[in-house]
Image (cartoon, rainbow, N blue to C red; front, side):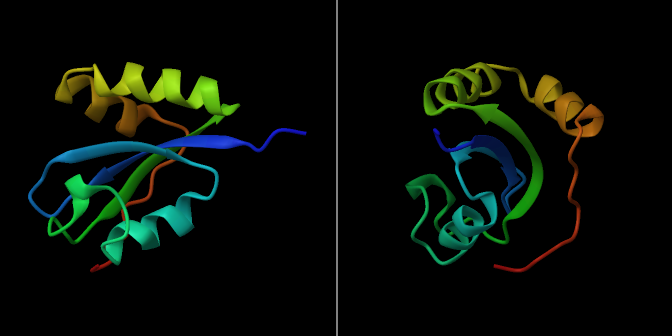
Length: 93
């Protein structure tokens, strides 16, 4: 059985949005917060998880990540607001 992959969106301390994929979103968030995540998120804390969705297999998650990254910011915000997962707790990192 193939692992389940998730697409997630983080809000960085500078207000930008970062989209990524992971099999364990919480573990990946901690990696971002400790500086072991994507180069983009380093030094942009605090990082807040705003959205995640199950994307199935790795290839499907990559496809969905590309799709979300290509959206204008307004569409990403709409996805976050209307999404099935929303997490707004501020967590310094």
